[in-house]
Amino acid sequence: MTPALSTWSRNIAPSPTLAVDAKAKALKAAGKDVCGFGAGEPDFDTPQFVKDACAKALAEGQTKYAPTPGIPALRKAIAESYAARGFAGVTEANVVVSPGGKMSCYLAILATVSPGDEVVIPAPFWVSYPEMVKLAGGTPRVIAAEDTTGFKVTPDQLRAALTPRTRMVVLNSPSNPTGAVYTRAELEALVRLCVEAGVWILSDEIYEHLVYDGQTTCSPATFSPEAARLTITVSGYAKTYSMTGWRLGTLVAEKSLAAAVGDLQSQISSNATTFAQFGALAVHQHPDKAKAALAEMQVAFDRRRLMLWEGLNAIPGLSCYRSQGAFYLFPNIRAFGLSSADFAARLLEEELVAVVPGSAFGSEGYIRLSYATSDEVIRKGLERLARFCGKLSA
Ligand SMILES: *Cc1c(COP(=O)(O)O)cnc(C)c1O
Picture 1 (cartoon, helix red, strand yellow):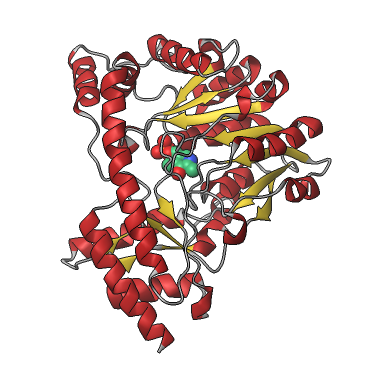
Picture 2 (cartoon, rainbow, N blue to C red):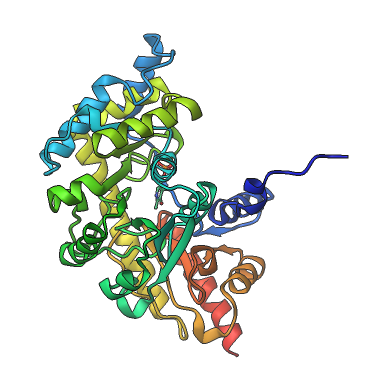
């Protein structure tokens, strides 16, 4: 007889976005002409100067364990870049480099959430937040936003969700899956409530450099000394520099919390891959090259965003909020009367178009499309989507 699996593995839902991506890739490998809008990663290659720096480190023998929270030069460079952006008094002691921004988020939650604690998560949410909270023994408390409010939660919603058990509030702007970007004033109102309640703020800023329409981003940790003490800022290189496979994430927090995160990491994964960290260091050492690489992607993403947004809104029955960040659009499909899972499954089966159902992100009635794909795929995908929606309405 096989012994039972743990509560943890029985309770966790595997990542639905990775599942859609895997299914689309399998169909493609079988020779099918799939239009993939499922992927949550840029379609560009990692900039050459970053790869060169990593290759050089590898050739020079940077292949051993490094200090758990990261190689000193990288932690120092990260601290300096945050300090220059208004993070008062941040030094390398506030910084932990982890194997991926996903790991940074999980460690932040493990370091702050105990069994029975509640974590407020605005929906539509990134698929991993609720599962990570559950793995820490905590309880996710979801507050939902719709396209009518630009997918942003209000201070009233947050106030109503805070209880004596609340330990943390998750903020993710620009957002995956909606692309929504909170304004400074909107974030300040939410952060003020968190400060009053004395709860941690997990600010996942992984898409901080991908904004359009002249939109800007800001960090809760820069709002006030109280906000700085309570905010755990997560970011990384994956989305900004097309480095998803490198598995490098960054976390900035108050010193004792950063130390706790480092202690957890020392038992769970040890350091992020040593030579990969030298690649990331090159981003800080060559700001002009980094800026040029980023600018090229920003221009392409913005063009595709507008092309996809206009195309979606031209399809009768679909309506799509004009999101200003990340590389996702989150159109409303309620007019078709299908669940988002059925819509996505039939769309893949009948038209070979891969999208992720909104239900995966805690929001029924929507689908997520990533425009981190070629103009050609967007054009073809829109034609197929229009035909599919036409069939549904007929
Ligand atoms: C992609 C992503 C991350 C982290 O990505 P890594 O590849 O683990 O660095 C974190 N948060 C959100 C919302 C993301 O979309």
